Amino acid sequence: MKPNLFTALIAATATLTGLVSQVETASAADFNWNSSWTQPTVYNKSQTGFNDAPFQQFVQAESVALPNSGQFKLDPNKLNLKYDHNVSVYFINEGAGYRNQLAFEATGTTNKSGLLFNDISCQGNGCVSGNWGGNALKLGDGVKVGNVTAGTQLDFWLRADGLNRGTSANIFGTDTASNPDGLQHTVAYAYNNYILLAFEDLYGGLYASGVDSATGKRNEGSDRDFNDVVVVLDIGEANVKALIGATVPEPSVTLSMFAVGAVSMFGLRRRRQSRTSN
Image (cartoon, rainbow, N blue to C red; front, side):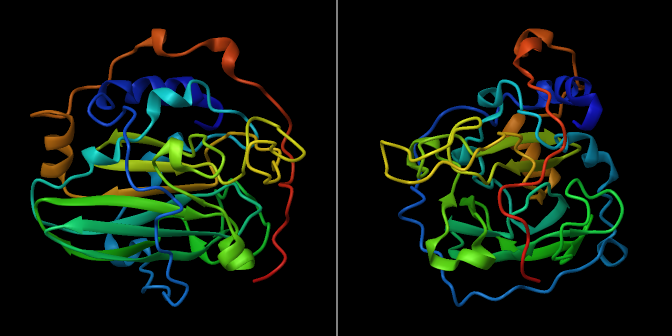
């Protein structure tokens, strides 16, 4: 992504087969976001040894709609761990004016939920958003979910501008039908034995404005670029291989998955709401 959007996406298509399909899962309205959650310890990449650089190619350029996003829809039912693992989540990048928050839920043999990142705002070189304020996270920063046992289902939730809006914020999950606007807000890729998740944080269809007559909520002029929160899940190599097959296949070129005309190029523009608090 960035200027090499097609190259990077095409290279990942061979590893996506076991992760993408439409499913029914818990609705965003049913998810219990606990406002008393606190930010867990954030570890930098010198502490964890995680290398974010290979994943930066999958960070979509700002205000460029992701073509055929439905091809990369996450099936959360596939995030059922076959093996125990100490799960971690790493911040890759963000291109949002909103001060977003991210939470997780584990159900099954391990049952817990909690906050992952309280203020997803990027600082330093390489941030898609540039210097928009907040500066809470550096590329590659990570948090620990802890030991998650085999037979546990994982899911992830974005609270859009949650730092500023609190309980009035929209919550977007992996189930398209249950999102407040009924639209997809997450894409997923399997790469280098990790799972990459990327979120769109604005309500409504591409550049939709005014009030959504179906819900009474206000459209937010979404650019549908799915770069507002980009994270990598470390669920363990064995679990990733179990999700996508016995081995991780070599990337292959599958041009048929993309419509070249689907990308709408627009100049870099500030999000509808700038970051106003730190």
